[in-house]
Structures are given as C-alpha cells and as structure tokens.
Length: 150
Image (cartoon, rainbow, N blue to C red; front, side, top):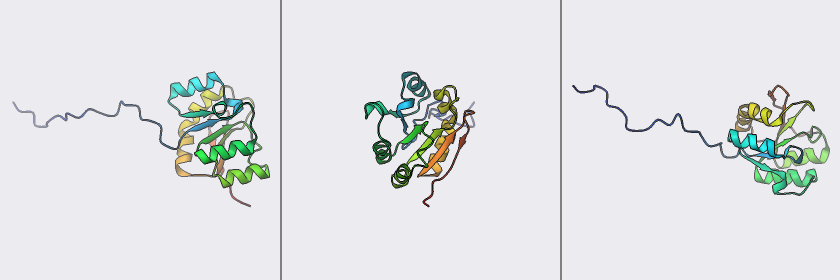
C-alpha cells in the first residue's frame, strides 16, 4: 500500500534555539557588571558586553555613551538622570543611544528582570533605532519613551 502523502525528509527547525538578532547586544554599566548577573544572561542566551572589558572602574558618562553609541550596543544602567543632564542628553541624541534604565532602587535581582523584560526590549529595539531611554520597572514591564530634541 502506497502512502498518499509523502513524508518530508527535511528536519523540523522548531526545536533549534535561534541566535539573538544582530544589533541586540546589551552593555552592562559598571553598577550591573557582576558575575551572578552575567551568568544568568549566559544561561538565557542574551548577548552582552561588560563595562570592565573596556574600562577600569567607573567611567565618565561622555566616554561611555560615545563607546556604546559607536558600537550600537544597548546601554543597561541604574542612572536615571542621564537623560536629563544636558551633555549626556546631547550624546544620547548624537549617537542614537538605546538605553534601558531600572527605575526602582528595590528591584530585586536585575538578572531576572532583564530576562523577563528581554522580549519587550527586543521589540522596542526592533521598532526604534534610537535615540531613546526606556525604563524597566520592578515588575519587569518596560516603558518606552522616545527622546526628542528640544
């Protein structure tokens, strides 16, 4: 008896883990650059760069923003005032920085929050090339705010 529908010899791709999209590399500010967090990002398959790979200790925001913008990385930080300081605001606009800021000092584990917010962050970065500063709440929800020149 002949099978009416021939079976495909091609293997299903649904079980393969997809690599992260190009252009989605997180840059961890010095206050987020610690082993437990990067271990969680590694396990989740999230691509990142650590500040200590490029700078020693705390670095001037002007130098940091320039580097992040030139490399098209996504800045992750606790510094909520960067978007309001005149010089940093100009650099965010000039280098089309995509920045995500934790808005609460009582967020729990930032690694868990980044994993939880990862999908929303990717969608925002896919739709908006920058500049923008979005916030990550302690619930893991991401709030988008597009930066505009005044």
